[in-house]
Image (tube, rainbow, N blue to C red):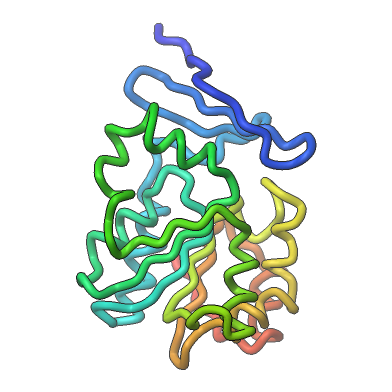
Length: 206
């Protein structure tokens, strides 16, 4: 029986350690006892992009993806978008990107060289703030997959993204008719209630 092999670790906050494991041909990124993502389970991350872009209905939008991870959401979006699209990714850890270019290069391929891509090593909240203060152009869609749902599992600082204030900032960082999409491992009734309070219409897809 194959055993999981620890490939690398990275600390993204004080006491917050992410681990990259390999099991045969599969990879997984783990936080404590939580498997945050795996090459064996990618469908829902891909659907985050597919469903958002289908609803948006624009061939060349400007979109913001919060969290690179293993790049499933990004690659699904890139495969669907036209050559004039702009894809901005905010990834908090440069080590995650190093993993994509190193141990998981076969999975990533040449996707990180896409001229439509702007990859930023930063908190996605900072780019939302930039769109609100005019430092950068607003977005047609914001896709958030930085936790296992709308709570700060990976980083306590992520909780501000899901607060009423944070949701209001995300709304204001969107162009008219824009879409905010949040990946969640399970329904979250409390979060669902906060969305209308922040002026955001809600549609749950599962």
